[in-house]
Image (cartoon, rainbow, N blue to C red; front, side):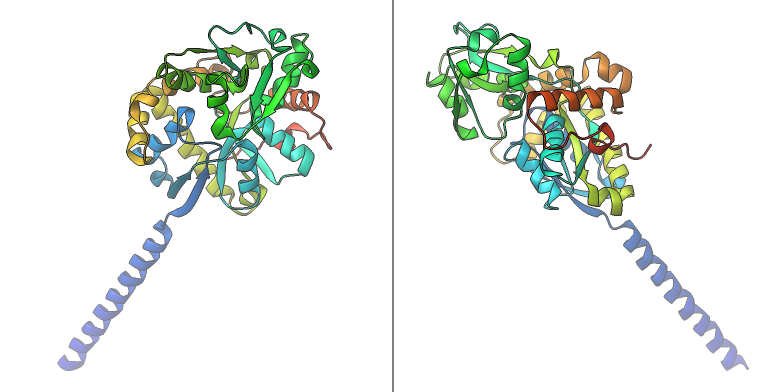
Length: 334
């Protein structure tokens, strides 16, 4: 009996050990982070510096997300990559998302506003005679395909009483635009006012100075927004909600400490120089969040304002099908 009793105890111990192993394995499986790619709409810098701080400070790991950030090649390209499943989440201009849904039925939705007012504008040399959009008549304007500032320009010109047909449009690769302006081969660039801050850093190295002619504030529309695919919203709604929580954490940290976000970006992006971002990053955050829209709504959508955004886009360019506000944005995690 003693033998059998010992054997029974050994058997129970073995069962207990096996149970603990299974539990540990199950816990490990449950804790495995979701691998997620964030698609930027352009190269890292400016407002996107925040993502690297969030990554460094655990905003994503705390939500069970293993995040990879990849550079972009334009606003429209970012939409294409999210729609096709190349990346799970992206950030780009809400107006481009609206146009993509209206013209191609792109299966995407914006899930969080980041920049509350459009920074659309022109970049010109400091001594340029172009002081307003009306002054653009008779001059050349350089832009790249899919440039969000360019897509809104017809409406900006209309509001300013200017004639787009009197503007010579020069379409070029995005990487060459700054050179066209600085070399005098174009009189203006279709450019965000936030981007002009970075351009000034380049211009100062060759003894030149640039300035902005902004018009986005007169439109009263959203700009950069986090978005995802309809497939993610349908199949992984919890992931979308966790991503929004992580993104909120990210931008809250960056707003409080812009320098830390620059340092985090410089440490993670090969070739990134800190001095190139010391002015543009704080300015980008200030532009995005120091306004009445963010003060009132935070990172939540104002659906009436989204509907106005749709109206603005449909007025500035023809859409095959004008979407409704609920076709364009989704509130997740509320």
